[in-house]
Length: 536
Image (cartoon, rainbow, N blue to C red):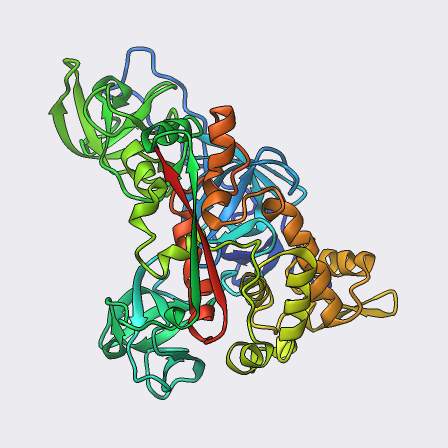
């Protein structure tokens, strides 16, 4: 609002939106370019044509809809909440590029429908233009994710394959002359998103960049870094079978970003144009299923007026024809088969990276502070040399030091964020190393105020005090592994219900492990304590 006024636009003026970020839209109108508040823009759909011979006799009137798209950082998700507040419960998580239907906008929140659900999201993470990630835009890709977005590491897992003692350059662009983002040690696990012309686009240790494909391998080294310390495994028996646990989880509608084949029954669809590959949903209550028949599981719901792309037609077991359609939703109901796969510890315990799902977060790692300072925290901004503070925090609140360090590195952008470097509040400099209280739309001010109220006036105080907050959540509640944060088998055993779970994504725990693995792989001195669930 401190920007100078370029022009004044009257109600109804048509503008072209080129990007949206943090509640502002970059627009062009009457040959001028500038920024306006997104809360005062709306999109009106063209008038729908009726009278098609394929339409029902009493067609349902269609309300013009406004479609926008989720615009968060790559590999992140946007929380859809039950109310227009960060204290509202999370209804579902929407991935980058998800199309949503806008109902209303007010005070920085947008009421939407998406994936068959209705809720509220931060307006600053919606854009009117569909996203083409192959192009650079003026989107908010470099914005702080804020409280209402969550990291989601996906891609193909590979490992850095260079000689021990050397490193692989991660660069800003696919060129050996591009600037170096980071140096990756031998055995580092990376997530690969694409490969072209000898370069791989990757994420590693919370950073994005490009590395030479020639130095990546899909096979983990026979002597990975994590094997250097001591590993202690314990087992916890649960009085239920894996199938019983999966059935309990299915009652909580677990979600997945896996692409399923989906079908809709013929009487749910009308063709309103000559294009027989475009079918419009008529009426409400229709659902996409995993096969041609009602005996197949529900993958997602669809809405009246929604247009689906039809790829084929098959006769179902119920005598109806069913259309196979392209699903446009990024998150859908997970099948019991896929849910069972992620529930089964046997699928992960024998892989060093994936076994980190069972890392005991309430158990100290007994790391060596000088080794951590030299191999992990060197060059990490305000966090450099602070290993002893993480060790003190671990001792004080019963929390794994490497987990704390991983959390801090991600939240502070490797020790370089504004909150980490210090913000002045009431004449005093405060620090916040874990992003605690840094809510979407006011991350710096709200995070700094939280730090002031907590008395975090030194980096060390922020590291130690913030650890108390982290421990008081899931870890002190007994959910002290990533696996238990996601699935909470103890509660499922005692109550017969899925409750107090950190995420709905069936692959959440599996997607969180590479950063922790990579930190352990840099060390020689530690104790790796794993707690593995056992079902009847």
